[in-house]
Image (cartoon, rainbow, N blue to C red; front, side, top):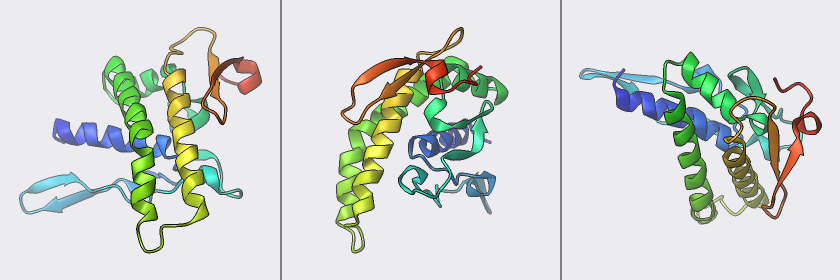
Length: 173
C-alpha cells in the first residue's frame, strides 16, 4: 500500500474515534480495486454513537486494547503505532493535528449539514458538541504517555480539569 494510503487509513481510524463512531468495524474500511491499481475507498457508514442513548459507547475496534474513546491516552496511541509498524511520535502528532482540525471545523461542518434538505435536526448540535468534547479530551489526554495516568476531563464549557484516573476509570493500565 502506498504511504499516502497508510496515512489516509490512520486518519480514518483517528477520525472515527474523534467522531465517536462506535460502528467503525473492519468492514467499514475498504479497498477499491481498479485496472490501474488499488486504493482506499472513501469513508462511509460514519455515525456518532455518543448522542444516541441506547447505542454502545464502546468502539467497534480497540486502540491498543482500549475500547472507550473517552479513555484513550497518548500511551494507547503510542502502542497502537508500534502494533501497526508506525512511528509513535508521528502518530501522536497526527492525532493532535486532526483533533485541532476537528475543533476548528466542527461549526462549519454543522452549518453545511444544516443547510442540506434534511439537515436541520436537533441531534446535529448534540453531535457537534460531542465531537468537539471528544477532540478536546483527546488533545489533553495525548500528554499521558506512561506511568501513573491522569485522565483529563472536559466539562460542557470546555474547561479542562484533571481527575485521578481511578475516578475516571479504575482499570486503566
